[in-house]
Length: 484
Image (cartoon, rainbow, N blue to C red; front, top):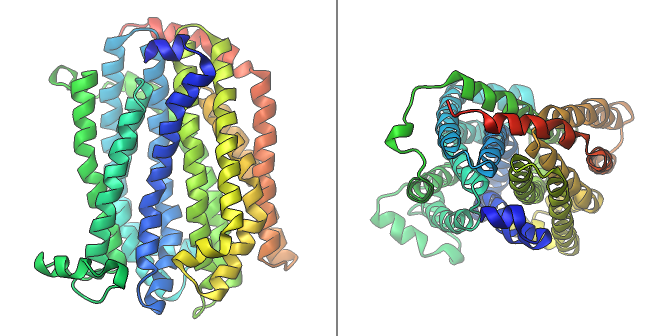
């Protein structure tokens, strides 16, 4: 695979390597979509509150996932570089030390889950009623079990960086199947279930499983992710020789600092994007919901799940560009590195265009699949109408930003995202709704315009290519260093 990445026909190899990654990252979001579908089949009142709760909690839990993923991206960048330079000992050292860092981050989030869930849901987001009550319990479980998604993304990123893109997608399919069956059993338990899930209650009764409704979806996700971690770890040990006993060293602060210094800007950058979505959620919750009507929050939770799929597909193509760029720079070929980013962006543009066409053509049916309440369908359809066309621009910004990160210029992408969100999206959203008194359509137009500006800025920065010429020398220097 390394020869293909460094010497194969670039357009073909980026497609061959990137498509499984894009599909695999898209499958990450199907955990949430499956949960939304199953919860949407509960009784009407319980279903709406549960969908509203997970709509908010998805964004909150995504902040932790994205924070962890930023460190995984940094690890992948360093591994790709060392792989391109044939530094096998360096690969093993970085992989082990990065695993220790992921464990430490997981422990921190367990503490956050215990002490902060209620404060975040009610006081920061502004959730009300049953949405706030259910969301607090759900958030505690999902954040407390964050280690499963942290490790899942981290280990699959390591596989990708070393040239394997197909094995992770197979395991993700298996994990989604397990999640689906567990969710049906734990959400409905031995009680009533829709006809399509009538097979679940007898099995749940035989296994003495309780009816947990929303919390059942949370536990199903955590368990399914934990199960798939085992074969992923086995592949890394047996195929790539990682994490074996000789690698079990104490924390090496030089290596950890290298991962952290490269990864924290990426983590913060991605958190900035999630915060922007949370601010939109908060504006909607405060301006367009009441204690007894959270239809707008439910609708936004559904469309944000669909949008998260677009985001993660883009991150998949971005991961492919990072592997090609990292290995090409490690081998001293910046021209090939830059072309790889262009190819990955082009493929993602095609996928985003197809995704938008499907969402736009079937928006009412897609939303009603999860919640057919007329106010929910109307609000969500309006969002897709205004924001859907900008998914192509969103994809451009994501992939080119990931490509720049793959060259090691993580602080540059952080600065771009932070400036756009802080100087444009947040103030424009607040002014449109709370100062000018506009309805949700104007808020959605602000979101759409932000995605377009992301694309324009990243295209301009990437065309200049200065991030490549300033980082290739440091890549070579680091590759020449002996492993710690």
